[in-house]
Length: 378
Image (cartoon, rainbow, N blue to C red):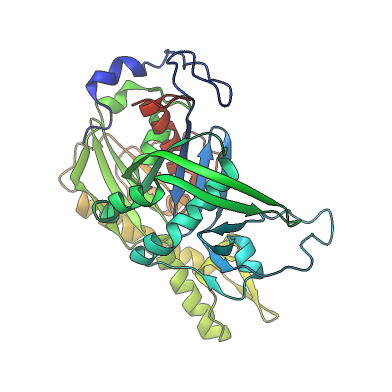
């Protein structure tokens, strides 16, 4: 699969200026076509992320039963503002993300791929697009799937997202914003290629450095449930060097949750460990448990597992030019993983940015490469 066909190479020179954006609802002056927004969306087991231009949204991939909240304001103005995600879609009312975690009596969270695609992907996608998308503009959408699930689910993924979707976003004050989300085209790519696109393309979808057209680049994408490995050999997908394993960050979280259950008798949900692991401690029924040494031990072990998988999978790819470590889990494990890898590891294009956005930023950039910045191209 060639990601950048030769017939388009002349169109992706770094110094080629992007076409001027058209005003909302207007035609693009270069093509005469009606404007189409280009979005990237990454529907992950841990977090759902979406970008449209410079706008972004991220929330935990949790659905909850909606409930009537008698008082929805923070008690003090200084309190951190949470993302209030209340969605009505397909005849059901959902709390989503941290709102579901905090307010729903019945919450839904899964690490099962079949269930995730059939029950979770659409409402999570519509929540993100309901916040970012303009109701009057059609959308061209780029998204990704783990390598191991790509062939099985890519057509279903594209089919269920394409078309018109009626959603209602309900505000903290009870206000209702009805939207008709019209998804014109959906392109599904192998998930870790998003980080490759983010590294090699500008925000306008232009090529930054021609080395990527000639080099062999390996991508290690550590997600929540899965770890994806893929190889781009002169911008062609390598089946031999691509695989999905279960070595996502959830494997480490499961060990931590098991130790906490032994010590406290409480079964801590995996999605409630994010802040505790980052902080280095968790309080359960008044007792504080230190997590620093356990977390370091678990993450070192997981990084070694991933490094061993790299050695086995890429044994024949001794001519690898460089590697990319990506994903939210990749950022957490990078200090443990990088010393165990042999070869150049490319830095993130935005070293201080949120690593969870690398794939989805790349999806948006690739969408602008394929379709332009604001038109309904082929």
